[in-house]
Length: 343
Image 1 (tube, rainbow, N blue to C red):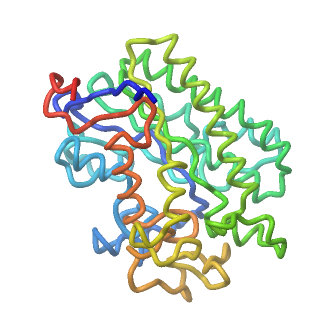
Image 2 (cartoon, rainbow, N blue to C red):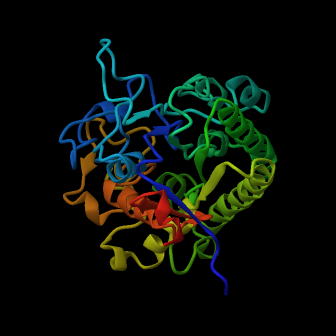
């Protein structure tokens, strides 16, 4: 089988890295990530990241620009001159691809934020020489719908709208000067404790034999990812000189559930930090709330709080993206210079 063409990007080509938006968070006005034990593994204190430590954006930054972690655009504050030339994180917890007015028309309420993808593309500095990590985006549109009892058929009908919103944002970013955009797909949501708890059933046929994940939810993730890949192919044909890369979060993560010990995991479907129950997840008693418990070794868990992943998991996903094994086209970021493209 012929290998797919590789896209080689040098550190010199990528002066900064921008995270436009990250999702998969159901939050309140006082986000749990502002309290311990969030941030305990790497930062030793909460930083607003919904994990025990670093995220994909941080691992990318460490490799690309020798920058160990990324300031949040809206959290820098006080007019201080942070190193935005090295990188900046524009992520907004709870943000969606579709705006709230559109979701409301479908009977879906976003309780977390009024910031959608369209609002965030107004940030236009340093785009030309930056790697734009767009997401993962789209998950919250589906999260809110699933957890408000919207049927799968209706939610599938939202997929083209979400894809169109992402496509429009990508093309708007290119108009503003962006050249290299990494677009993640959806994780295998049927493996997340929040979904396993909400849709728990006694029907064993609903669960994957090798993973224990809810197969119908993973099927939905793959349906969405397939639609997204098709749209990215269309954009590449329209803009052949842009670098539009699909980040396959699903294929990067699913091996953790099939062969956990190979990756150092002892627990795949149970949250490290949570409010109890079969999957250590309780929507009304989330990680960081009084009465919740945290595991002793987050690195042995795939899931951190039932919704988000541990630093160890994000690190492995980042590795699969950085070495190109989970990107389309195959991405090589570790080039010493642009002349290394033939490696």
